[in-house]
Image (cartoon, rainbow, N blue to C red; front, top):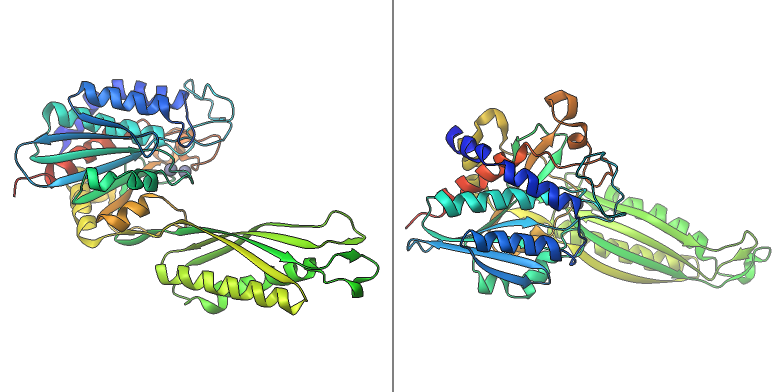
Length: 397
Ligand SMILES: [Zn+2]
Ligand SMILES: [Zn+2]
C-alpha cells in the first residue's frame, strides 16, 4: 500500500495549505460558513454532487460510480473552539478567542484530500457520501444533520469517522470494537431551603449544608452503585451558594458532568443522582429541583465494521502502526448519534509524541489546549486510509 501513501504524499502540498487556511480562519459551532463554502466549492470542482446547508452549515458531497448498490458515509467535523490560540504557528488563528484546538481543520483537510484522489483515480463501484458536519463541540451538529434528513436523503450502509489524538505516535491508527467514547450528560441541581440570619440557624433550612452533604453522597454513586468492572464519572464542577458569611442563603446550585461507557450504567447514574438529590435535600429540610439535560450518547463501534476498518488499517500501515483494540476514552463525540442509526466505526490517528517521535511539540499538546496544533504529517496518512477504505467498501456485489 506504499504506492497509495506515496500518491497522496506527492500531491499533499495543496491540502497542507488548505488545512492551514482553515486553521487561520476558525469558526465556532453553526457558524462554519466560510469553511463549509470552501469544502462545498472544492467538492463541486472535483465533480461531486453537493448539498449545502444540511443541519445548518453541514455539507454532503456524493459521488456515484458504476452500478454497485453499496453506500458508504465518511464523516469529518468542521468547527473550532472558543480558545485563545498560543501555538505560535505562522498560520495561527486570525480571530481572537477562537481556534482550531481539536484538529477539525485537519479532519476536514484529510477527507478533502481523499475526496480529490477518489474523484481523480479512485477504483470503486457504488455511492460515496462525504459528510462534513458542523458543531461537534457540544452543539450536536450530527443530530442537526440527522434531523434535517441526512440518512433519509443519503442512506448509508456504514459510516466511519476519524479523530486525531496527541500523545499517540504520528500516523498510528487505534481501533476499538464496542463502547469507545463515553456518554456525557449535564445536570443542574438546585436545592431550595429557607434563608436566614447566620447567627440563628434554627430558624432557617440551610441549603449549603444540604449541598455539601449531597456532594459527598454523590461520590458513592460510582463507588457503591456502579459495577466495579464498569466505568463511570460523576463530577460536581460547579457549586454556588450565598454571598456573605453571616447570611444563610435560600438556595444552592450544583452543576454536574456525568459520563458512562454503557447505556445501562448511564441510566443507573441518572436514577441514583436524582434519588440522592431528593433524599439529601429532604434530610436537611430543603427541596431539590433537578434539571437533567442528556448530552452525547455512548459511542459504540459495531463489530463487523470495526473488523473491516481494522483490516484496512493493517493493509495500509502494517501491524507495527496499528492498535487493533485500544482502550475506551471518557471523552465524548457526537458521531455516537450517527452510530445509533447506522453501523460503523470511529478510530483515532496519533497526532504525535513531540520529541519522542520527532513531531512538533504542538502536535503532542492535548486537544483543547491553546498550544495544540494538528500534525500536517497526518494529512497523507488519513487521506490514504479513507481512500483505501472507500475502495474496499464500495465493490460491486
Ligand atoms: Zn474537541
Ligand atoms: Zn474534536
